[in-house]
Length: 274
Image: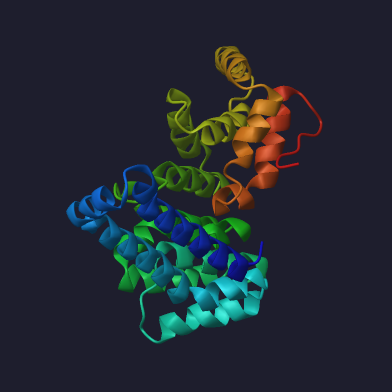
């Protein structure tokens, strides 16, 4: 549905609802009682004006951005949002995520690092909310030093969102640097919790390649696999992963997740989001 159509439809519904509620007492309890009712409840009309004013203000404020998104004008979106940043204006999390996704669509993932530096300076709170996903260029280029330099501080910062993903990225940095014993210790931390099922699976998959032929460790992995398969059927797992398709970490590691899923369920090919 077109953005302008949604805008008109939304306003029509709100205005119709208001007039329906406003005139209904006249038909049910009569004119005199209806006037008395509205004299006592005038604030309801005031609240309605505030609601419709606020919602329309939001639409009008973002009209240009929404129009560009409707047209899938990614270059225009990039120019518009970067222009706001260059002018020293703040952007919210929604706008920042739109810009991040725009960089990915345009094949300009490296610009996420520039955005990271800008937000870290101008909006530390917003940076902490998005920091983990802003570091995906280091994953894309398989840069162990960059991964370590970027994610280790985030992993130690308690206010960072998706902190477990920061820790997992730090573990990947250790793996890429062939620091296997340290990587193993970090990955094992994810085996004590099922709060992050995707990280649980990925860490278990990596650990299976690091454990060697130790029968006790292999038995433990098999036990965890049985538990995991009892909790998620292949279809349930595919649906679960699909819920996170807008997460840049999941997007960048999608092939890795598919490989780990195939390993878990013993299939040569497992697809998500299909």
